[in-house]
Image (cartoon, helix red, strand yellow):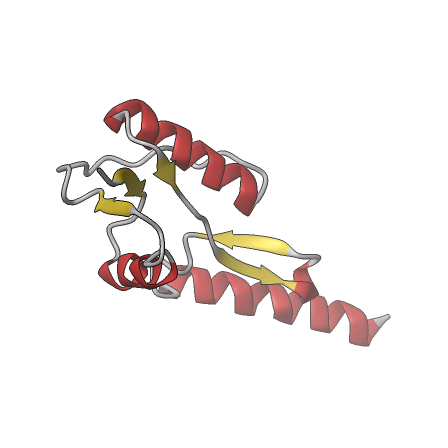
Length: 114
């Protein structure tokens, strides 16, 4: 019997990528949608690893199935590696883009006036 592994995503493309990556293993990959899970944990971690762990633990507690979670977003070198969380999910939503551009402009002005 294949082991079940919950892939903590609602993104069909990401699920397909995991299916390809894990095809050689005797795993039955399950999505959040298959289990009817719609809620999301609050991502309070300091970075991607912490947030991935928060998600994995959260969904494991809900489903009681071994869970694989990831986290991503933008890290901007010019902002000291600051994370722009949920940018990928929001498809670089206008407020995120505006914040990024505004902060880069402020830093550029500060560096040219010094």
